[in-house]
Length: 165
Image (cartoon, rainbow, N blue to C red; front, side, top):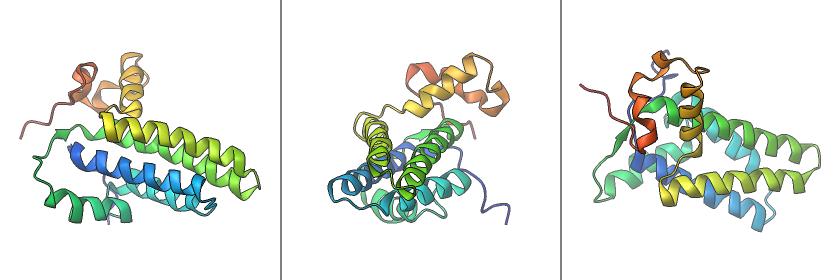
């Protein structure tokens, strides 16, 4: 059971960016098509990815098992802890969207989904992970101890070094 609840380290950034693209599509559809159930599905997906990486996430499974293996792109391994932190921010924002929607504040839920669209778009299209940058700032400030991700000292270069085998 313990192996189920682990987050991958390193993470294939190609897959992470594809998952972010899926998140953008879901959030845009939720807003554009007035699908008020989608924040709940998205919340589940983020919780699943924080707890297990792609193992319990339908979107994560689809991307890692179907899409990524078929692409002619070499894996790009990056440190896992910043990506997990970013998924945690997704939990907070989609959780807020779900709660707001459940309470009848759909417009406020849409605003939260809009924030997810911006962050996931930056990750998916530009490879710029806002959560990873926040993780780096918190490490620099000493809020996150260096032991959490010793490889992350190079986070400001835009590359997360893969672990040495």
